Image (cartoon, rainbow, N blue to C red; front, side):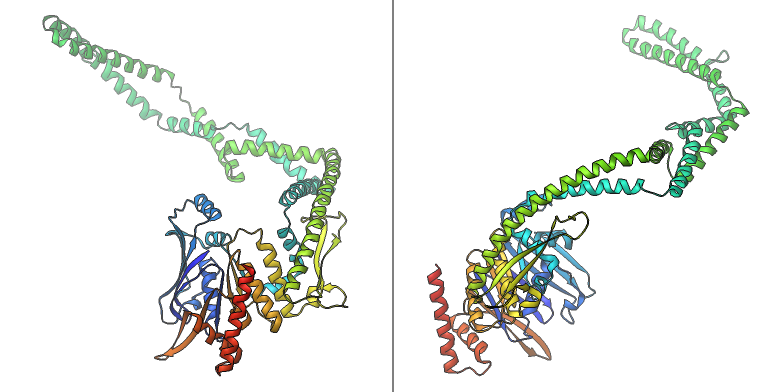
Length: 561
């Protein structure tokens, strides 16, 4: 549930703090007073796209923050995204005058995409465009699937269809013309021959480079080894002889003074180490076998490896892997006919699997469609459409397979709003007011299985008046018994049903426009309903009518309790 909304320097709103309640929250006000700005502000803090035009003229930045209750589904999202919250969920969006924006959830910086993802668990906004979306028949299957509880069937069909498409793609790769086969076969054969001839080994380049560097410095290396060996073992006064003498005298001294035994042991260890070092230098020098021919061979081999690395953009290990890929591709081409025969058999078998999964999904859809028809008709009759007929029409997918990525059904909603009229497409039959009521009915039905706890209706009253408006208000109140509902409206029939009523007004001060959002008490509500009835000309009659409307609304609420 949305508890608090803070708006700062957004369009004509310099500052507004709104404390919402559970139940039905209604916002009213003159056209242009700023009602849409409040909805836009909520959209901004929920991750919708924003622009610098949203920032109040003259301000460096605008800011919107919203405080929600913590709920189970949002707590899981916070854990998954490693964001900590205490007792409440706080969303914040800052928009700078240059159009840049930043988002925070419980103080942690996040992307707008993350905020939008979380918002889907918090709020369902029914905007003025939703009625037009209802006329888009491409979305009718989506609406039906949202209503039905058959995610398992949708998932199973999706898996079978993905497998079918995968086999199709493999067949398409092999189904090339003979000229293309010959061209690709020649190219692969050349690459295979070139790489096989190179007799590649992983890590060879590093090994050869090290050996080449050794050969490049052969003279300096030999000289250094000779000098080191001479110092250790050459001549009469070498390090090893001196160390052995020191060992002898240290042992004699230790025989007299036992506390010198450690010194003798250390010198003995040094003698062993020096002996080992001298032998290592001698053996390494003897192992050296330098020749100009070897150096030339190394350079030639390294040049070939570098050429292949540059040509293919891969090192030795990757080239070996690429070589195997080329062999596999060539085998696929050379044995394409056999492979195609096998794949076509697999495709035919998978086609049957798809058809079976599509038929299962279609049965589930038809069961859901019957339930949806019954529910929508019931809801619409509650909304003053007593003669309405509503149906979900099924048609086969028009392709040679009989199914596509969404199954085997083309789905559209058809209706008849008045007695005696033929059923037809919603886009051809429904008026603006009927579209609003159909969408409200669908929202109400879908809300039963939707974990989102807050619903926002932005001018749901489009094209609605009279008794229909009264029924819309009553329906919104019924929805608000299970959800928090916010509604922007121009109709007194809807406003009268509010649990909390806010009026949005604007005024000019010092040549600037300021918008205010105020909660109304009972007397304030009566005056606002009177204004909605008769404009600025409020009379005793319009006030009495407003009071009567409020009393009727309270009576309805008590009857529903």
